[in-house]
Length: 338
Image (cartoon, rainbow, N blue to C red):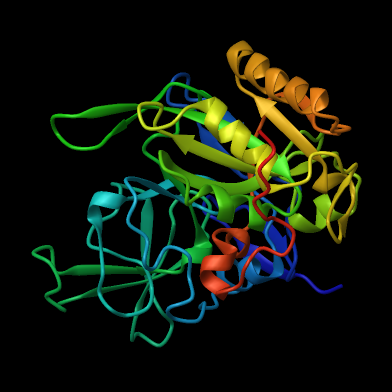
């Protein structure tokens, strides 16, 4: 196995190949603003596609990235270390095929002239991840700056999402604030679950990931190995003034088969199990009530209930999968059960 030798900010040595990033003997560190002590920097695992761009300084194909035609209020984060990079208010459509911003969060992005002297590379100032390039003098906006960024180099945190699992706040405009809540459902392949939920009235956003396991920062490959304990899960942010948790939970039981054990249709494995991860006691009681109703109707329910824990966001290519590919869910269909 061959590794590339990389020098990260601060002079630390990283060794990377196409599928992983290995921190050398001296760990990457960051300074605590509270006590000026050094703390280890946690780097997320990268898929081969992500490493090609973030480590090897490749470029994703134009018009294919998740965040090109993406207009949601929030913050764009470094895929490798999670550092905040750009705000949605600074995003604009340059028609170039990649997400464009006319400003970055102060101190978040480093600019370095390419070796050929033709373009200026932009990297995460915290971990050195390759983001893209910056251009000036194109007159797209009054700031006359265009940060051209690969979607695959970033994650996105909606304005509604905070460290809490529920009761987050999302600012819709200057005069109105909507209180939002979250729900977590696992019911087979998360492509189909996300597809069915993102069209529901009252759902603000849906994204796919992994929950219920014991491994940190799991990749799709890790989860498919049946060794991490995670289930393919969809995180839903919804407006409780436009829908209810019970309506969403009912929908969950009617878009997949809750009687199948560790599978859904042709997909077999523990990651495809039927499970609801509740964020509070009220959600738990609602979910249990709906399960009991179906049992009373004769359904042999396999759906499990568990307290929501860490939600690990899945790789970019899994997000909004059917919207990007033009396909349709193969194991999720609506079946009236209530």
